[in-house]
Length: 301
Image 1 (cartoon, rainbow, N blue to C red):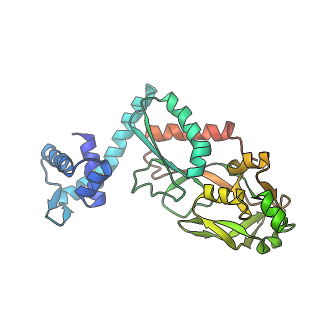
Image 2: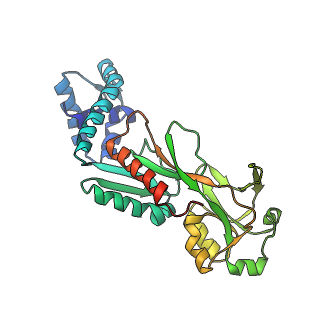
Image 3: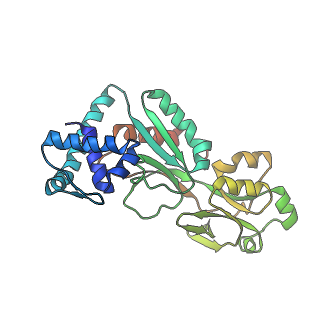
């Protein structure tokens, strides 16, 4: 039996449509139909009831889907473990991260990993809004900040230190805030996420608690890089990960404010969809990431 056809059968069943599954795999509908027909012929069973409007699993198809998921995962895990013994990774590793972190930090890490496994194709999706791993068949996501509750599996890679900063032009015009409460009198730059607007900034207290302060945004964007550019242009005070603005601080284009009132650190996570089946390509890249953040990541403090 062709395992790729079997995986495609699962995809069709999950999406409820041969057309959608074909679009997902970037193949024609006719080729997709041929794959299902070939699998049915090999197994000598009918997998779907087909009409012009509906696609419904047969009873045999339901049994195969329920029990076949575990079988295909076990088979692929075994197959990939044999491949890894020869230190070869093949196929495509699909990753996603925020645009700014991806360009500034992650791409160089991926490039070094890719040189070790030249037969592995890597697809990096850069997007400041979190992509759905399952719908988009993404193997691993790098996410920064507070994670939303989900069924996904998250591995903490490192602390993500943050700070407040503004341009010299802004501070000359509006003054330098001396305490947290003065932020409410200033023009601030806020980030819009898919799950809502981040309109509170969290400060770490000496006793270990967190002080959350409501902030009014005079410029709002869903892009971290747009927020940096707005800050450089003097539009207000912004809240950044250190890795994002380190060079701007060194050159004086941005100046840290409220240095004695540290922003609460967040974290950087690697996120995968399933802890029970982790392909070799994902497992080895995750190990590579963990080693990088433990020994080479320059912005932990």
